[in-house]
Length: 217
View 1 (cartoon, rainbow, N blue to C red):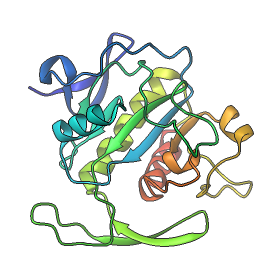
View 2 (view 1 turned 60 degrees about the horizontal axis):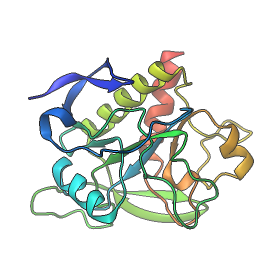
View 3 (view 1 turned 90 degrees about the vertical axis):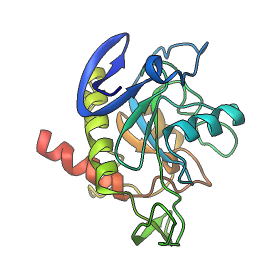
């Protein structure tokens, strides 16, 4: 069964995209505390092509967790209330853990330079993170649409700007932020923004979020 709303602080929030809730799927990250503050939404990609149920299994086995996952067809899987403090953006090599203050979203994508796949063929595009160019498979349009809609719903629910980290000239910051920048940031960021070794989710989805934010404004 799918719905069109996510759960934030126990209440439904309309997102306008297909949603599968943990109380229906049974895929739940339990016994985790709620965040005391929410000032950001943090985007990741999975690095593989397992769907929402497989992503849950992988994260559970690794002892980490996330609030949401966006499947290849754009379906949003919610594994716990959006206000639960999941373990998605901490650990070693981080400038500052985002777990205490950011909602976590995974997006299914193997993110390598191989377009061919027996089930999920993808286009490959060039990107640059921290000044280093690389090529990786792109997200499907349905995934971008769901990511933007989910970020928009969460930003509305928590009173956050629908915007991403930016440089002084207004361009999107495609680098790891400083600890002071992370402490003051409000909006939608990516894993590479707080981690020195990650480059997910790339800049494509962040650009779409930023463009949608301009329209909302």
